[in-house]
Image (cartoon, rainbow, N blue to C red):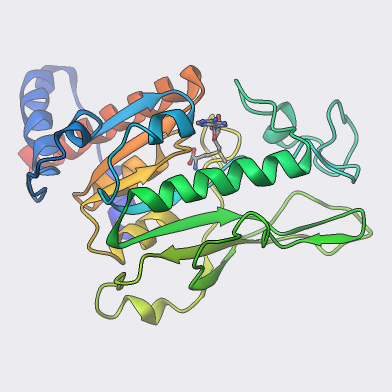
Amino acid sequence: MNTKLKSIKKKMVPVSKKKAVKKAARKYSSSATLNVVEDSESSLYNFLNKMICGDTLEVMKKLPSNSIDLIVTSPPYNLKNSSGNGMNVNTKTGKWAGNALQNGYSHYDDCMPHEKYVKWQNDCLKEMFRLLKDDGAIFYNHKRRVQNGLIQDRDDILKGLPVRQIIIWKRSGGINFNPGYFLPTHEVIYLIPKPNFRLKPKANAYGDVWEFTQEMKNGHPAPFPVALIDRIVSSTNAEIVLDPFMGSGTTAIAALMNKRNYIGIELSPEYCDVAKKRISSFIEQQSYLLIHS
Ligand SMILES: C[S@@+](CC[C@H](N)C(=O)[O-])C[C@H]1O[C@@H](n2cnc3c(N)ncnc32)[C@H](O)[C@@H]1O
């Protein structure tokens, strides 16, 4: 676990200090917005450092073009539309039995016909690309898979988008103990930048294979590990970070850890609540450390 994450876990806030912590929390959260340059696109400021509960395409359409520095996201993978014995609807004994995702998301069934899913994701990516500033970038996490003997390498979803690099995320393990397969332990992250996107100095030394253990202690069925998103955010100079499939709020936490602004969009009111509580408790913990350091 990296040192930033360790420091977050240091102490809980005692009840007697609540007032002071709330005051410091206001200070901490506003310090995350200090670097934002005011411009005429005032509507963006209605979304800053907020979780917006709604359909991602509808919400993104309300955001101004060329306004976002960094988009980090992991969409639903359409896992219930599966040709294998894994994530089929109602599978009780398949290779994913016992996996939290088997029960699906709270407000989304993750089971579209493949062509419809591809079009939806391509539309989402094009909308994200519209939002990017000229030196912005999208980090889009997905999984390649084989269905009916054919490779789904996600080329169709990425059609028309300028992919610059494929990063491999190596997890520590998987859950698919099928004797017909080696245990799957990787996912991919597509870097889709606008032309002027550059990493921070020396960040390129991380290479293109990243090893991070998947998140285990999170009520959401498919959360990012915070350290993975911290790697992405801290490798850029982004001031505004958007996650259009925010789930439990991991991208917001990584943004705040790096004193950046976030915007989160999530369909499920349940996960929106989880994210909001997680963000508040993170800010309170940081503020506690601030006034006790
Ligand atoms: C892979 S999960 C993201 C998890 C997130 N990275 C985290 O760390 O918790 C995908 C999320 O997309 C949400 N989702 C599905 N359809 C959506 C839509 N049309 N608009 C917004 N969010 C949607 C699901 O509810 C789910 O939480």
